[in-house]
Amino acid sequence: MASVGMSFSSVAAARPTPSLASSPSCSNNKPFASLHATRSLETSRAPLRLEISYDRWFSAELRQKPSAASRSGPVVAATEPEPLKIMISGAPASGKGTQCELIKKKYGLVHIAAGDLLRAEIGSGTENGKRAKEYMEKGMLVPSEIVVMMVKERLLQPDAQEKGWLLDGYPRSLSQATALEDLRIRPDLFILLDVSEAILIERVVGRRLDPVTGKIYHLKYFPPENEEIAARLTQRFDDTEEKVKLRLETHHQNVEDVLSTYKDVICKVNGDAPIEDVFAEIDKALSSILEKKSRTDSASMAAGMSC
Ligand code: AP5
Image (spheres, rainbow, N blue to C red):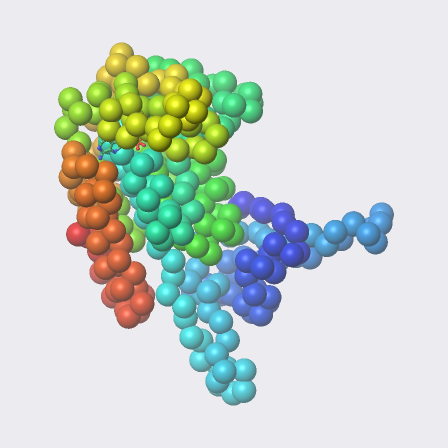
């Protein structure tokens, strides 16, 4: 069970009180989430804190808002379409991060990148970060006990539940996929960027990052806009030809297991194409899902989607 504490105002803004107060329940009548308001007894000026305990998964029921009819008579719940839940996968440097930026901009999803969470942990100098770096330097997967909890907690944050999520580079192994399945966390679509190996190596060695804006550049395919940006670009510690070969090996060892978990919702996209063409294909698939979501009920959604 993950627990998130936040200020009253941010919760109120994120989720209207009536729907939170309506004690959502799942089919076995156990509450999915409970809400507690607490205030420190020492001082009445301490901010009111709300603690939301998430039990397994926010169900669609959390999104049900009372309709006009339900306020005055019989309980008829009008259900908002659930936000998009997307996974994006592909070999190292296949363009996941680049496409995520474009998807986020258009669809407003919360971008959760396992690699970024790990690099943030390394940057903070934590024990988990130190351990993770040892694996990342060898191009190996970071052990699940570090990654699974990290991603799960981020996924269960209210912003990801409200706006929908875009999971980048996760899951990467059968055990990670199974951990999500156990929590009933499944994507509407699993995008697989398919890129030929020679191109991947060129993309890795030419990649540069802007530490100020977080933007991803490529010295040849997507150069910085001006000299000022060019001067501050950095390179990732694992972006060498030698390390990318190890990362590719790890990818090939694990990818089939992950694909088999999501075979009913896979959308394979040609990632060799220019950035805007790759995005056009993804955009088409996402728009079609949104359209289906707005006119179908959960039963037909369960039939699965792909492109
Ligand atoms: P992570 O950070 O996820 O790295 P990765 O999977 O190797 O992917 P990259 O971030 O390198 O590439 P990308 O696909 O995002 O490409 P980008 O858009 O930047 O993981 C790093 C490490 O963390 C792993 O090796 C592992 O150790 C650990 N880790 C991560 N997740 C884990 C997990 N779930 N479990 C355990 N360990 C985990 O593009 C690359 C370059 O190409 C850029 O320069 C870009 O401008 C350019 N480009 C992009 N698209 C195009 C295009 N269409 N045409 C031309 N150029 C393009």
